[in-house]
Each structure stands twice: as C-alpha cells, then as structure tokens.
Length: 400
Image 1: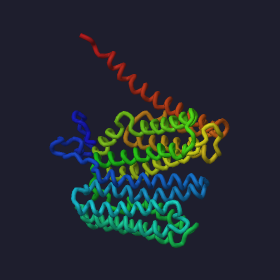
Image 2: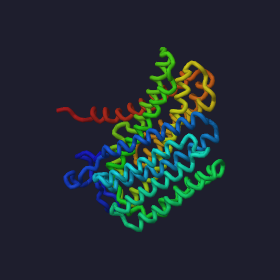
Image 3: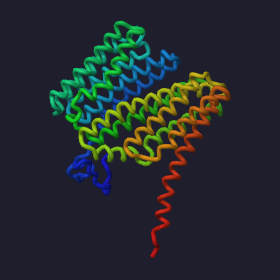
Image 4: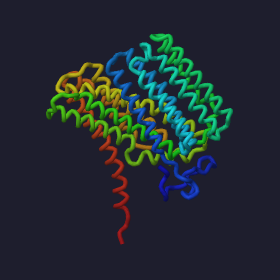
C-alpha cells in the first residue's frame, strides 16, 4: 500500500515525507503470510467476544466485553507495531511470533469464562504475550531505553490483569478497567518518536484486521440460522446482514480511503505520525471493532428469527453497532482530512432513531432492511456528491 506514482510530494514542517521518495529508494513493506496467519487468532477472539456478549447481553456483560476487548486489542495492536519495525523474515523471528500467537489463542479460549475462573489463564497468557513483544522489540533497533519503558508499562498492565484473574468478580473487573485506563496514559509515558513507523504496512495491516472483523458478522449469519430449514425469509435476512457488512466495508475503504490514509500518515514527522497512529489505529479501531461485535451480536438473533420482533437489548446492539462504527469512522476521516463527514453522522443518528423502533415494534427483518436503506442513502449521496464536481470540471474543459 505504497502511495502510487504521480501523487504530490508532501512537506510537513520541513520534513520530506516517505511518500515523496522515489519507489526505488523506498522498498515496499507488505504484510507477510505469517502475519495473516497470526490474524486468524484474532478472528477467534472476535468470535469469542461476540458469543460472550450474545449470552450476557446486559450492562454487566457489556462492561466485561468492553474491558476484555480493550485489554486484548492493546497488545494485539502492539504486535502490529512490532512486525512493522521488524518483519518476520527469519526463522527465530517467526518462531517467537508463533509463540505470541499461541499466547493470544489461550487468551481467546478463556474469554467465555474469564470472570468465572479462567481469568488466571488469561492473565498468565497475557504475561507471555507481553514478554514476547518486549523481547522482540529489544532486537528491533529501537532505543533500548524506549523499549524498556514500554515493556515496564505493559508489564504493569499484565500484573493488573493477573491479579484480577485470581480475585475474580467485581474486583477483577475493576483491576482490568484500571489496566484499560493505564493504556490511555502509556503513549504519553513512552518516547514515541523512537519507534519509526512505516505507514504503508501499518495502514494495510489494520485494514486487513477490519476485513477479518467483518467476517465475524458473516459468520453470525450462519450461527443465527443454524440447522433451520432455509426459507425465503431466512435468505432475505442473511442477504440484508451481508448488505450491512458491505455498507460498513464501503464506509471504511470507500474510494481508496486506505491509500489516502497511507499518504496522509507518510507526510508527518515521526512524533506526529506515531501519536496519530495511537489515536486512530488503537483507540479509533477499538471503537470500530466494538461496533462490529455489537452488530454481529444483534445479527445472530435477527437472522434466527427474522419475522419476530426483537428484544430491546438485541435491537439496540444491532443499531448501536452500526451507529458507533459510522461515528468512529467519521472521526477518523475528519482527522486525516477526508470528506464529506456530515452525511455519516446523520446516518448514525438515523440508524439509532429508526432502527431500534423498527426492530422492537415491527420485526428483525424490518430493522435490517431499514439499516440497509439508510446506509444506501448515506453512501449513495456521498458518491453523487463526489462525482458532481468531477462532471462539472469535465464540462468546463474547452473542446478544440
């Protein structure tokens, strides 16, 4: 995902961006097959979190999923930074990355009962993940002092997670919430400019993670239908869930929005790029992932009983998931200078205002259809608005 030839050179405060360098002088850094394999564990993590929320769709269950996703995503995203700094091109690196993958698999396995006894295994697997990450980063050519500071802070997080696993219940939730809160402070306590970030690989990897997350909503279609006899109504519900996923995919990628993000990020100096990476790709994508998990949770019930009205919590999960995704996506687009913004915010509000009553008063199928219609209107309006100036410019060009 290197900016294509012919794009303008970006200068930011006297810093010549990576995007301005000739392609021959700047080798492309692509996502490796092992990283894609590593991401398969995250598919399972998202599935486990969705299943946990579906079985405990109440404030307590939602709070637990909020915290578990935050704690897991923090270190998972840290491994994206790691492979950006040192691609897994040697056997020792690959072996250590597979060890980290095993740690994430154990974490995923413990998700359903993390607050009922499995939190101990979650915590110690988390310690393993932190140790592998810190040890590998120490060999990545980054300042040892910066890596040591980062490792210490991540170990404090891990200690809070381990302690919570032993104590369980409300105390566990409080300690894991404290670990979540510490994550907001970590970027300000670490010397971020020491970590040189390659924009092409970084943006591409996060885009692939989002595609994996969308896959969870597709999986929810099959889980919701189960072994039920396939009817026209079930097929219609399945197609509508798929259409919602396509709409969110378009909202994220759109007109090469990922390429435009690469270009924007590459035009910044190390300090600004890294701070923005934390805001957009850690916090921002945490909200996007949470939106997808909520959508998948609601979609399971909607597909299972498309002609019935939904419980408020289930209809709310579906509506809030789509609205949260659109709102977070709009905030990200605003930061990197993409437009328009207002249609997506209006769409998010409309999904909340119309989707919830459709699901609870008419049927699950009605909420799905209404959501698809709103996404089509919002994204279609943006497409027409983007094409209109181009058509006007084309008409203004004199013909010989």
